[in-house]
Amino acid sequence: MRHIGIGIIGGGYMGKAHAVAMSSVGAVFETTLRPTLEMVAASTPQSAARYRDGFGFAQSTDDWRELVASPKVEAVVIASPQTTHRAITEAAFNRGLPVFCEKPLGASIDDARAMVAAAKSSGCVNMIGFNYIRTPASQFARNLIAEGEIGDVVWFRGEHTEDFYADPDAPATWRTDGDGNGTMGDLSPHMINAALALMGPITSVMAEIETVHDARGGVPVTNDDQAQMMCRFANGAQGHMFFSRIAHGRKMGYAYEITGTKGAIRFDQEDQNALWLYRAEGPEAERGFTKILTGPAHPDYAAFCQGPGHGTGYQDQIIIEARDFLTAIETGQAIWPTFEDGLAVAEIIAAARIAHAEKRWQTVAAGQEPS
Image (tube, rainbow, N blue to C red; front, side, top):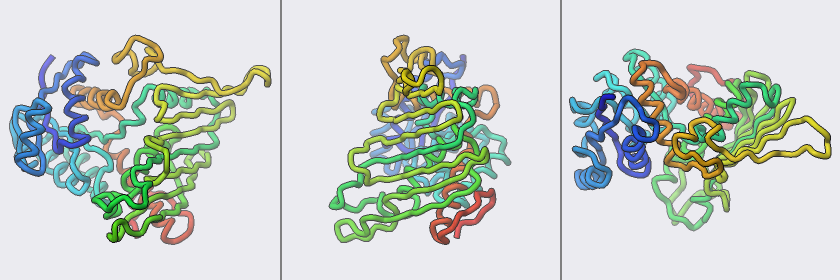
């Protein structure tokens, strides 16, 4: 067992989640690498000091460059705004540091491509944060599909819907300004990542992207409230995805439904410890979806709890990510999802924006430039 110094850039919602994960992962998974919280960077000295004291870091700074340059920092976690991701990543790779970056990979498709190029050039370990697909239920769904338990997949329906902006009188904030903070930039990456993980590559898309509330409190809204996307997968399956921040009643509406030639699967993140499985077998009168409660028999569950049905939570997904990041550092072997997987999501979003603008199907291809 050896210790590894962790630097986290950003101490807000996700910064705290990663700090807690790095503090817990050694005990939960008994990892060989044991993280120590060396430094946290935030936007002001006061907030950085508050995060340092609250989360247990040894040092704090209001300049991420100081964190990246520190000899005590041996790996970097980026939990700051997406406009900062590229510069931080490139600086960290120049020092030879492993990088874990929260989604989306960058503020633009050009950022995402540059970050992947920097990762390849450096040879450094890199990962991107798509935590929801790490639930034991969704990992089990991936296994079922890969093992052919529902036959050849022919249809995918996914959504990421929330209601944090469902109230039309809610005031304008940073979330209502800029493409990266709209629904396509903020919510869609998670479900697109799920579609790729469960179904494989997407080859073409058609999309509609819209702003329902053009202004909030007299301030113009410059990004989208909701979007829908039809898609075709490389395996021939059809798909549809819907994304919304104005879906009344949906708090964490990360949900998918998959149809195969021998059965079907349903999942909803609001009930994240259950997976619904339909097998097209047996007497018709006895057929129906079976609710499977996750337990120690499912991926990564037993490290958290020995009781079936007791359940895992949001923070546990981040701890699983931390385990994977440490394992990748220790072994020097890439673990999904890497920056290239983040770029794949960005390429699909770029194609969807073109499809919306041109009102026609768009092929998804690496190197494609957004209009």
